[in-house]
Length: 435
Image 1 (cartoon, rainbow, N blue to C red):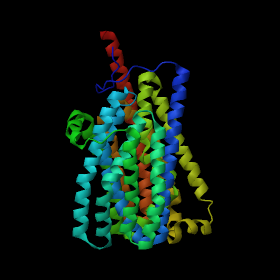
Image 2: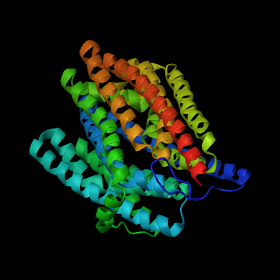
Image 3: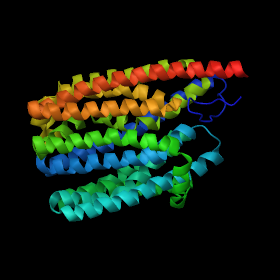
Image 4: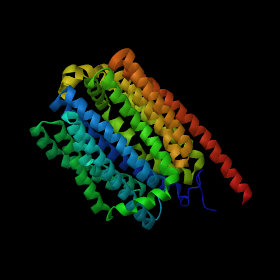
């Protein structure tokens, strides 16, 4: 009998040899941590360099482009690479190559379509904000293609290639940022950031030996619409909540407040980057745990989420010990306001870390309905807490509102994972009785 997930997804047979399987998990997670470290350092360096080069207000404009990219990125992941990770982790190479070509083509096509829309909107708006969005539209295809290769490599269990690809992006960033600093505009920094990602995206084609098949996007979307549609809504509600909070904060408090929040988040940069890209490793590994030892999935998710939460808490505690002079050296004028938000932003990351453990389990189970409900609830809490807190207490109030909302959302994620595990166990028993 072929093992099945809760929503009928075929999986590969269970992996043999417990010691070798454990070594494989450790190796894949190690490359995942290395890749996320490279990504974290790049994101942190970009944020710090832009903050110091442009100041609070211009950094706020850059942050608006950044969170907009987050929305588009999650559209691409929901349609293209989330189904790839769920359904093609650990499959034969021929199946993976076919799927990776279509998934990367879908991501590239998404970048072309939404990039064109961003460029048109930016040109229509004009000014510094319009310029940032027009430049974002130019670089979106490269940004999404680079992200697609990372997902594809982790689905194949080859995190080393994802790590190398992120290193290529980081190396390409150095001269690009130096050129942008000489220009001194927000648009120049957006082009530098996205243009270097395009270099890494092109290198991903060389690494994999696969050409993105944009013409295969329609077939990919049709074949995986049962997961893709739900993951699209789930992902967009997640990043869309961040964008609504950023725009609302700009209206209620001012654009500078968006830069202050982003500055505080940069201080938690390693963990924020890990949370954004966590599904690169954890969903694929949770799917392998489900196939090999379904009864261990809950423990795996608990260790995963709890480990992240504890690490974020320790990092936040260390940040409280940083002297003002060192903080100003990193963030410049943004430090004074951002340092006041370390505690609430840390607690928000702790709650998010706990929730990602449960989210990985729901994705591995293919429980897209429960995953969607959890994310919609968490996103609603995030917007309400962020904007309600801003209305009551300004930037600090918004940060505390988000922290409380994130903890509440994490609790709902874990409730749904518990129910989904119970359903999976009952379905497995029913299948055994009928065979």
